[in-house]
Image 1 (tube, rainbow, N blue to C red):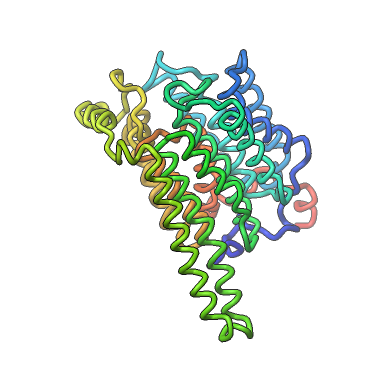
Image 2: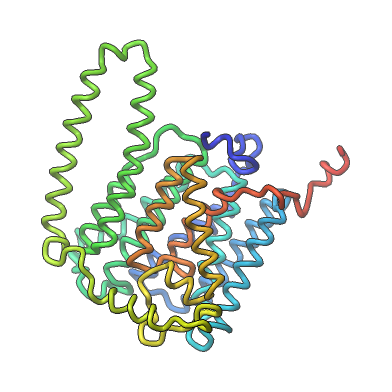
Length: 388
């Protein structure tokens, strides 16, 4: 099965809606805000970003209103319930609505958009470049040191911002059934992650790049194998493969030798203590309803964070994510790879739901679970009613 066979979701270009320029602008601002706010520290950021992302979701709803299904509606209701329970239930008095709501709004907007609309060819590529440029400037012009506090973020935040922003460009290429994915943003993400000295970011960005390169290499290989010249060029293809493998292995080994892996390895005693604390805090009540981990508010694990926030329902969310892996592996190699990247990053860091990692998670889940039983349109076109 390939991307074009997913029911209700991956439609032909004639069935998908073109994104209005005004919506492109709102989405661009919503995605780039986190990058530039992390470097510049905008004033009144919480209310501004909340209003901006609310306008984004409203515009998305108006644009695709004729295609919204009851499943889309149910997903939206679930997310707002999740925000309300997080704010007024398990983490009451500990979190901000303005700070956390935008991640759900942008994630839901992207999930709906990837289902029903078609973006301009280079839209997400342009966003990826605009996300990367300030970090090249900071590292090569300002000579900034990522150790400790890095502007308004820490070193782990750099890779997190780039991996999940550039993931959208790769996802768009997959949804649009493009044969080859532009690799420059993924390569640049690896380099910036290396410069940031984030072990998690560097390692996960390498996995991210692996899936992008593998996708392109496999398409090129099968296209060449089906050509009439295959017998003539087969030996050269395999020779090129081994040369590239050796060169890539050497470059990666040099990067590892000059990264924090050389001195710190994979060990993280601090995170192990956090996980032990979390497990020791579990009982029937906390497992059922969730709890606020006072000693370690940042659990450095998305899966544990979901259980902490929602209890047994959080376990259900984790099952949905794992189930999506098994669904996407049958549908799209690159979409499966993007969810693997999200899961790997989520093991030592918290990437969702109230983080930028939700921007890539939500579209992947909505592609993995297309509307079937709840596929009726809420607001069908008047023309369709009259035709019927």
